[in-house]
Length: 355
Image: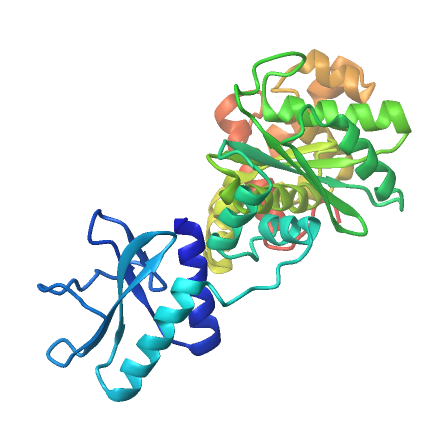
């Protein structure tokens, strides 16, 4: 009931521009089209429509869904009293109607963060969407076969609560509800689940996709937050290419933080960290590829050698060369972190790598 009342208040505001505050005299229920405003309760019983010149408010009593409420608007003039009388009729009869789109259109607006809270709650009620934690996955398919991937994801869903929707010609979103959590079956984390998605699409359909992973939010009503994080992960993954098919927002949080820092400050940081002789390393494609693979394998010499089809001695020679030029021995964790930070600053400042 409260969602319907909030929706009516928002629709009245949308059509008339009038702010209405409503409260229950029986409990602490407060419904308002003004967020965060303290309710001005009168110290007398409101009967009918009452203009309170001292408070410069017009109060009115009405019933909605068999419950009694008191509402009020700013102003106490004759026009305000007339509007309050109209508001009573609207709130009691619910005569204002909003034209909602189809289920898919509403879902898309919710995921994109374009829908009002009251409409999100109405959607959840209408379609029995659980108020559970969920996460968003963005699946990018740039080869013209998105419709096939979307159809596949419909069959991939583990339950009827999960949602799949098309965002644009290259992208679809998958909203997964956790319920008992991601601790069962073949996966243990969101990243591993995303790996399962990418691998399944490739194995079953022969289609290469990239999957962006947002964080877990506590309710479907906040799924747009996770969706935006997943989109950001895909975007940053393209800039800071790792060759991976899965990109998680968590791994790019540092980059996201640095994006909000003014560029002149980023330049100051880079000037502090970067030795003059180091520029030769960042213009050498082979050296950067070697360093990034070494960082990706958690500083594992043997695994890096295998992945690059490189002799161990050649790898050690390159790591020594990076050390001499930059003063950073990336075989040591702290120096590896600093080197990674320099790589990030280079790209955020638009210098590019190995140009």
